[in-house]
Image 1 (cartoon, one colour):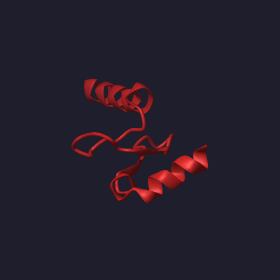
Image 2 (cartoon, rainbow, N blue to C red):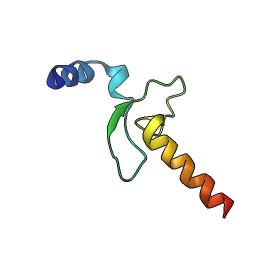
Image 3 (cartoon, one colour):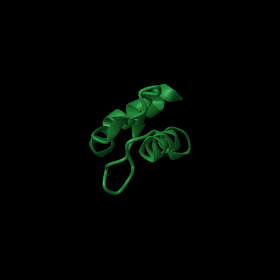
Image 4 (cartoon, rainbow, N blue to C red):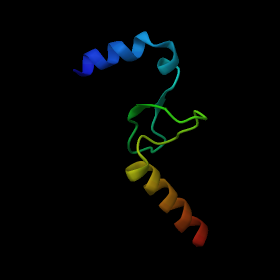
Length: 62
């Protein structure tokens, strides 16, 4: 199933150019950026994005 999805992803020029690596240094998961602007930074806002924003907020508060 994963191999089939990877083949489908590679066949599509539009999606292939939107493959990104998660900006969380502890994660590094590849994902397809489906945002309108194409500027997504994290694989999931629920996990990696929330952690990054929490860390930045706490650093700024100090």
